[in-house]
Amino acid sequence: MNKIKKAVFPVAGLGTRFLPATKAIPKEMLTVVDRPIIDYAVREAVEAGCETLIFVTGRTKNAIADYFDKNPELENELEAKQKLEALEIVRNIIPSHVKCVYVRQSEPLGLGHAVHCASPLITPDEYFAVLLPDDLIAGHPDGALKQLFQAHDRERCSVFALEQVAWSEVEKYGVIKPSNDETTPILIDSIVEKPQRDVAPSNWSVVGRYVLSGRIMGLLEQVQRGAGGEIQLTDGIASLLETEKMIGLPLSGKRFDCGNKVGFLEANLHFGLRYLNK
Ligand code: G1P
Image 1: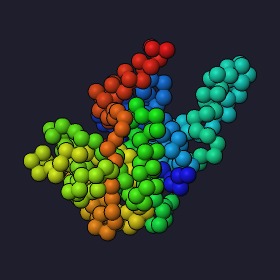
Image 2: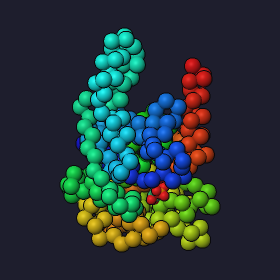
Image 3: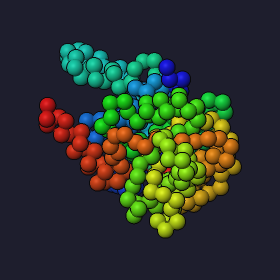
Image 4: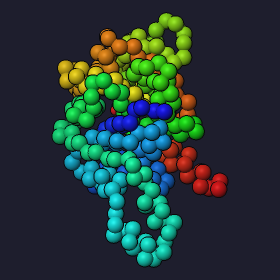
């Protein structure tokens, strides 16, 4: 049984690519068909066995907390009107044994800084999950995080999802150098954030699903600003690699990058077609 119970969701980003919609709505609350983007990552974590969901939020993100909270007025209203199907949907957004915790990232200092905001809730000797909700992953019955947990169970180390991207795209991602032995999962030799194509160590890019050793929190405290002037999670992972083994699991399933308009639209088409084909 999975022993990793905590999942961190960095959701403090401003979502500027989706302005003006995100002027008043968190980008994580934009809907892919009928569910907010964040709901997909949360369900993936819950299905993998996570019971404590840690949202690293910021100003203007209250709608996320409202979404995962109970809404007695709405439930009473639906019950009174006997709209039982709708009531069921509203009540079952997350199961009752799953708890949500909210911590604030007061300044947009980068993904590494966002993950570090959850440090009071993570001990150095435990592993925890990180899910970047922009990466919506579909098409595998087990879910990406569950696959990472299975790999972690076998290898007992940090693990993250990988995907081979076009060389022209490597500068958008964390990119790994695989070790020489051609095994799967891939043993990580080194990792770099958003390298230029001509210096990228491979075209294996990191997808937004991680299982990390709690020791990374102490290391993130020391990380200096890196790519884009931000405190990068990848740089924390690079320092963890100096002392701990780490593996990458090639992603089974299709990733939609809901952080950009085309990916978001593709995700809507993918999930929308399921309704059309019913
Ligand atoms: C982040 C990470 C990057 C990773 C990517 C996956 O980048 O910093 O290492 O490859 O997510 O989506 P961002 O998309 O925030 O620029």
